[in-house]
Length: 389
Image (cartoon, rainbow, N blue to C red; front, side, top):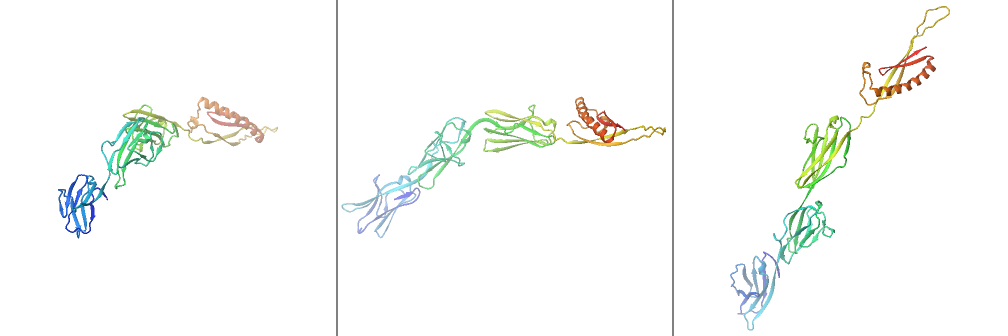
């Protein structure tokens, strides 16, 4: 019969016509007498004997231990002696040994790793491995599998993706199965990846710069400006760190209300005990969208003198024509007062060049439709057109 460890085993012996003979129970392998009829001979307090009407005799072994496994004999003192034997099988749930089972391991990236698991039980347990996260295991031959069978798990050239808890599971069909959690920690120096190294922004915008870093042991992450000054939390800047997977950090730097002083290079810096690295993001200005400015040119007819043969008084005629020209405004400081309308040299040359075209076109149209002679005079970027009729 089979009994799990810790339970009670009951061995039965059925006898017909016992008469005055005696029944005894013995341990075969040690030749130990356990009971004779109703009396317990052994000093093992876990053993007792019972019967029903002297026909069915029972040997009770409470709190069965693994050492109780073996052959037992029911014997009658007849001549010749009569007996019957039976085997007691004690099954033991698996148990993982602290030694030589591996404990948590810390290794450098690129090294070879061996995880070991040892267990006892009856029958002998089988050992399997899996990752606690459910990710597949990369074996030494490069094969990827969800689980691995065997007491020794070898990983060649371990990398950061293989870091994490591994479960050693022992089972032998006797519940419960047991497992041990072994943490594999992989150390490596910092590295940085930047998706956008050039970021543009207009004045007044809010912009966010981003870096992704990986490092273990845990890293120190911060942002610096052009001259190496560390950027701290404030009204202007908001640095944010988002940790993922234990060794990945997503770095963000939000810059509010961008102005001329904010343009330039920013560095995301990552440090740990194995090294240091940084990445650079350049923030450059984006011109504001161009606007159009409507310019009104007043065309004043010059006074004219009319003479007749009768020497009549001179008649002075004045006419004013409004000419609306629309030109694209160039991105320079806007002039709001006539007295301030002094342009830079290159701007002045450009405006004179543009207005010379206006002059040619206007001379033709004015002469055709107004029957007059006109002259365009540019004074401090103010356009005056004088026409004589």
